[in-house]
Length: 117
Image (cartoon, one colour):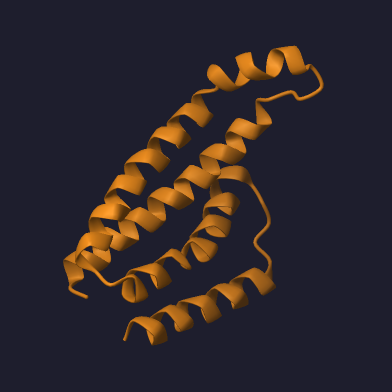
């Protein structure tokens, strides 16, 4: 894969990861004990709307990438979301980043490098 295609793929991965953070933020704004209010909460939840739009745009970018790159090269990049999401969660949501997550992330990164070479 060329550098341009790698950057394109990484852009998709980062966008999907940001979408996950937005969905987590959206979940904090929804109260499920009042089911008559849930739909209204979902429709006016800015984090959910932005996350869905981001997912939609990212899906179009991903499909564009798949037109020019074999799936066996592109898809391992998606595994990097398992590394990016916990890091974003630490900095934007205040979640704890444990040693096991860091170690697992390093193993995933190594696996991605091996599989796309």
